[in-house]
Length: 306
Image (cartoon, rainbow, N blue to C red; front, side, top):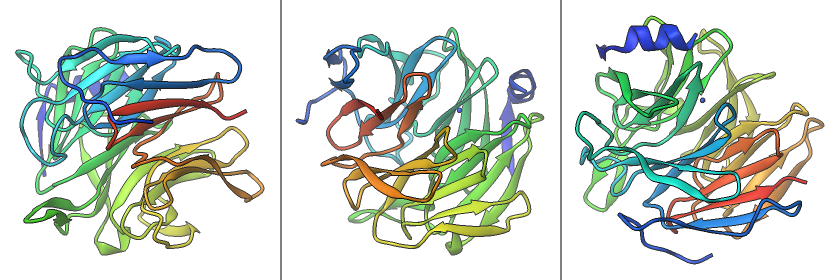
């Protein structure tokens, strides 16, 4: 079940290190876009995801700004240049009139629209202006976490199945994988504990891959829900996942405090290490860069894959 507001038109038209406080202060960038790219930007507020917008050639950062499950209306999305300059810290601002954004997490671009996972809704914004264009809310969802587009004009959406408990986040039993069609319908691809707290989702040449936080594995899933394990279960606590051009992929790991790269030939290596809570990573394909939000440190790292 879902609630739709101005969503059908938007979807059809679319057919994607030290701690520093944040808030109304501007973020500060360090470094430049030279060949040995290593840029650190501080001043965010619980950054959960980074996404490259290739059309505008900017990086978008979702800021939860508080608890990941609170409908507090203060989440925001930042815009950065590839050099690390903050163009607008609160480009899309949940506190602004007419904007709803609570705890934004994964983001995706489809056509001229930006889609953002936000607790129990996928919210849509104009990619150029940042103006809200609609939403699709999922009845019973508790932790919509990531969004990924496919070449059919649809979006894959994960629910990590978490809610607030006495000592922090606890299982809610809503683990799910959804597929949002251009007409605004949300189909359930899979639901249940077998999903292992699904977190990141990516669509690429090898199909749909899901990285799990609870069971620490990667699996490939089909439209009918059939799934095949790609990486075995572990205590790695996986978050974001991105496909690479060689048929491989990379994923972030809270448990191992790093970003892994799995090459097309199956070899596995740690490409960025010593990370505190690396969340939903992004990929700047043209520059061969991994974009890393540090959830606990309120920072974003930009690192070259070369």
